[in-house]
Image (cartoon, rainbow, N blue to C red; front, top):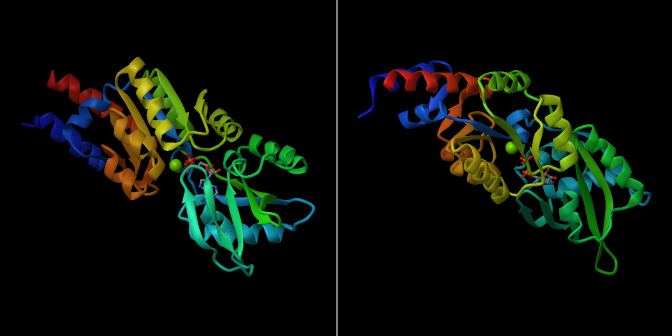
Length: 298
Ligand code: ADP
Ligand code: MG
């Protein structure tokens, strides 16, 4: 049977906007020694905005944006939403046979031509080399913490050709830095960022938040692997995330924590704890509650 102290701990959490799915999780979070955070939508707001569009000499910025929007109008990814928003005043038609590849990009047929949008690794499955005229610029945008996606289409001769790239900017959550600082003060031994985004972008965002362990360019299963290896070292490990791509890691973690508002349905279902109103700082409060409930139970 559940101890009264656990129940009051759960009630106390609920009053602060921390939803525990059960009492065991309240106790477990008090024992957490390492925490992994997803980047987009978790440490950042995930309300992405297109900040730059760049095109090769053969195309225009408008061409690039339109081509991307034809595909992304079928996407639920925040990158897709940002691109469609930026292209909302332009004329384009939704692509057909659209296929989204989680953690990589999207591909389909627009105006009888194959088009694709995605990260460098994805586009390089179709094109050996990214155009040199753009890659330097793309890298410097990534250094600024922006996410760059490449846009390509199939030209004559059944070969893909890069049209350009789109840089997308995100904003750190206002309580992210304070949360990391507070977690360190609570004695959490390791704080890491795990993301599907590219290494340069991830490093810049992590640095701005005071996180020095970064695992980037991860697929959903890779995120799970990071959790598993942290568990070998620290036993009790929490994972904080919002996306479908975080679900395997949330399930593997000793304590899975989902963002209540930004969180996808799958993330909310998989997590043990839900942060109402997406308040990251409540993680520290949850740990304190968990520690207190343990000392009372003992
Ligand atoms: P995160 O871990 O930051 O939430 P994801 O795993 O969802 O990121 O995606 C990783 C990367 O894959 C993105 O940064 C982007 O480059 C690419 N990507 C994923 N989905 C799309 C899409 N619909 N359009 C363009 N690029 C995408
Ligand atoms: Mg995310």
